Image (tube, rainbow over all chains, first blue to last red):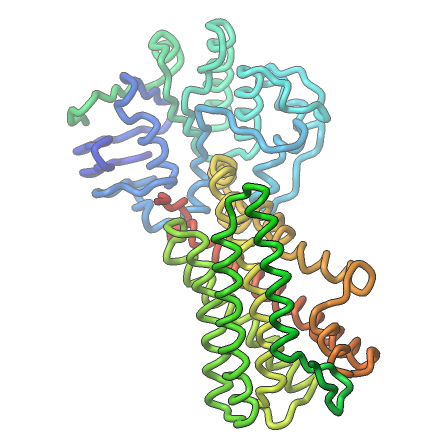
Length: 207
Length: 266
């Protein structure tokens, strides 16, 4: 699905060759090994200093960035919420893409999927870290991209919720025929649910 | 002693001007007595103002007596350069090239368009470069626009800095740079144009505008002075709004590269 050829980014990333297949892929490695940067490169939030990244055979530098980001969507590690209530935050992607927002019914279903029992009119400021993370996950899922780039989607969750969320993601992407690349620190979760595990090493070429 | 001209305006003599300076000296004395360490600033700004105004008086006399399209053009150009330079100085080191270009184009574009419309279509001056109208009105347009654009640039830079993570999150959610910065652009427009709006609201009640006061002092009928003030104020509003819109339109883009990624600042 993604192929990296001679890709470097500053002195953070140096990949001679790497392929990320479709399906659910886990990205593991010590902090500072460039996992987040890798997702940002795949999302076209940043451009490699050198080298080419292919998405489904196309050089992503040839694809308009906004169009690419709508297909290959990233979920940041720190949940970032916009001023407003839960509904407005769930609809934020539709608002930014100038698309019609989904009905409340659909929003509620999505909140249930991520196990967040909250009122749509409720404020977002009072949510806990874990709740915020589930809210932004729901926000990305609603947009229904082809590929999910997930930066530690379960970082603020306890082990049980983490397992539940990742298993939900695994089911969700398989059911809908989507792919996901997920950064995780929990190797056990990665081994349990992911089709492929890629390990990044610090300052070492890999592929 | 002052004498009275044909227009019933009291012409100030040297002795009267000296009395005004004597008043400034009293202020200076009070400031020094109170131990406020600003006597140097008061002195320098008073002297600077004196020199500048005397020079301007002579230069304007010359220009008004010898109308010439080139001279009028050069004066307007100098005003624009001075205004743009003032904005640049205010944000030393904080402006990207793109933002500087945006400031130049917006200042010149906004003020000149409105200036030509108001002078040639509304007031209909003849000849078109008549410095008696062109220069003072241009001064008011450029001065007000400079303040507004400076406020706008400040709000834009601050907004893009403090809300960087929100802008990036919007990009992640598939926003175009324009959509990602829409709320910053709207609030920047508000804060840039607010002083002009407040001036318009207070005008005639809270204070008498400078130009109108000047015209009334020089013997123009208040009703005539009011029509000028209205025309000029609407022109200022237009120049301010147009310049700020151009600045925002070009300026927000300078925070992104051609791959719709946020530029690394600094």
